[in-house]
Image (cartoon, rainbow over all chains, first blue to last red; front, side):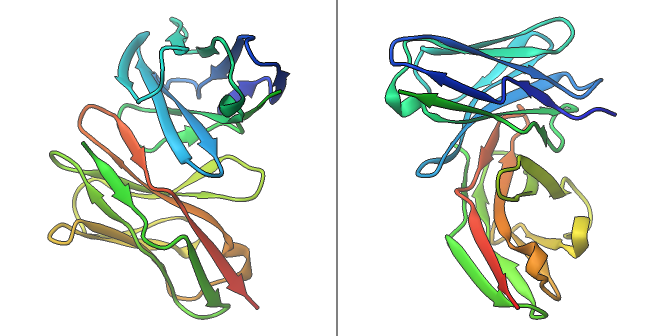
Length: 111
Length: 112
């Protein structure tokens, strides 16, 4: 089985721009979660989608949004980028509430 | 609110010695507990999980973890550490609604 894929792998944006990240889960996995990883804040949960519905949400501002398509692929959007949004964004898929399988991440740099 | 605490930012052990990486948690209901490992410049990899049953669970690469309900702990252990075990380890809890919370991570360094 193919693993979780994330595109793009690297992104450089400037403040005020917006960005869309994409995640393709493992075939058959209907749960997709997004995380932000930074050296100082560790791994922070953004949101989880299950069958096209947002099932759980972390404590991030409304600039962070996501969606899931009928084929379980998910996108995450960040609007009005800030310098502090620079981070590694990880996507993970799972079968229900079991272990998560992570993609390689998208490294976002905001200048 | 659920939470995970990994009290040690760093654990150093000598190769061949046993290792323990500590984790305590707080969650409503029955916990789903996990350990993940992250090698440099790579994504997280699943190591092992506790859902129900035997308190001692075995996982990949010779790792095991012991679930202790009264102490709300889920410590990661390995009888004999390898240099290649050096990495960043995360403990995580997932509640019945599927929401995951990760600890801050513990950097394990195994010296030859």
